[in-house]
Structures are given as structure tokens and as C-alpha cells.
Image 1: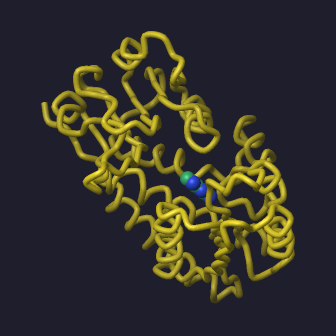
Image 2: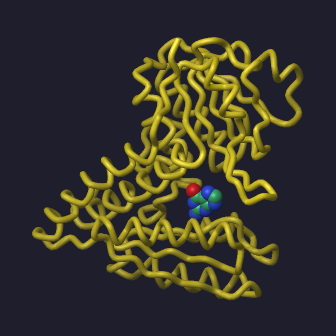
Length: 285
Ligand code: GUN
């Protein structure tokens, strides 16, 4: 039985080139999408992500505005900047790269973003819309995972889906999206009893635990689809996911690699949300 490697980089490139054409057409109608990207402090991983997001904007023709703030920036200053960007017509999307330094309350910051510009879909208004089945923006990483599952050719209806991780960014919205496509969803986490048994039962596994190569091939049901959201840097600098790729691909029917799987898809979905935000702000929802 062959295992299909789901190439997120290729799929993201395809999506971005479609968005590029869309943006060219929008510009002729006077719509110029813009994304503000805010980074606070010097986290090297955040810097890499922010640079990738800016590069994607450039590729597509979205104007990006970077705000790099010092590590010791106060909450009020950050929220002041967001309030200004909320009113700026050139800015259609506002992204605050997480995590934030400890003196800043993330919830307060997210709550200060205008939901119409919340291209991460982290604001409670957008979380609520997703939960009730009327989303405007889909959260980027879970939306990217859904596209990759679609690529595998599997119909989620009736499938046993196991999400490992319960974060607001990935695990929780992931569960909601799988449920919306009629999956039977189990959300597992660090306190889950008999985790291996739960994973073994899954037709679709979404791993977002943040533990390098935690899920081995022998945990996986033969033929399952494995989506690896983890990005872990080993001491030798090598990037690995939450799944042990070499053993898992012997058992799974489809699997995403790390790097080149979910990561590029997250960015493609962010671009999609930014274009959507620009259209909605111009033409109304
Ligand atoms: N940190 C980790 N993932 C994300 C994401 O998708 N968006 C933002 N803003 N920060 C993150």
C-alpha cells in the first residue's frame, strides 16, 4: 500500500497564484488589499513566520505594513497601535504574531482588533461565528489542514477524527471544522487517558501537540490520514513534526511532511483571508 505525501508547499503555491490573479483584478476595481503585521520582541521563530508572511504578501501583490515593537512594549501602546490600524483604510487585515511577551495580556490585545480585520480569526466574534456555523474568516492553520485533507481525496463524513492538542489557535477550531464536515471528533490532550488507543482508532489524525516525533507508526491505524501541525526544532537544528514521519508513512495512506506540509498552507490561508477582508470592507458583507 503506497502512502501519498501531501505536498503543502505545492498546494499553497497553487492557491497563492490564484490569489495573485484575483488581486490583479481587484486592483482594477480600486481595491488594494493591505495587511498589517505586528511583531513584539525578538522571538526567532516569530521573526521567521513574520518574514514568510510578508514575502507571501509580496508574491501576491498585497501591501504589507510591518510594525516591529520592542520586547518591553506595554499593553497600552500595542492596543493604541491596533486602534489606529482599525481606523486605517489602507489596512484590511491586522495580524499580531503570537506569543506576546508576558507583560501583555493576549486576550485583551485580540479583543481590541476590529473583527472585520481579524484575518487570524482569533477574536471572540469570529470564534463564535465559526462555532455557530457562519464563519467569515476561517482560522488559518485549521483551514489549511482542511485543504490538505481535501487533497487526500477522503470524504470526512462519518470518519473518526482524532485531534491531538486543544489550543485556541489549532486544536479547538480544528475540531469545529472537522465536525462541520460531519466527522466524529475526539479532542485529545496532555491529560487524555489511553491516548494511544484513541489514536489507533482514528481514520484522520491531526497532531498539534508540540512534542517532536511523539506519534510513531505503530500508533496509527493502517490506511489513516495523518496531518502533522507540529514544528519542532531539534538541537541539531533539524525541523521535525509531532509525528515520526519515516515510521508513520509505512502505515498511513496519506501524510503531510514537516517542513512543507501544513506550514505553507497556514500562510496561504492568511492571504486568502486578507483578500476576503479587503473585498468585504469595500463592498460590504
Ligand atoms: N503564532 C503561532 N501561530 C500563529 C498564527 O497562526 N497567527 C499568529 N498571529 N500567531 C501565531
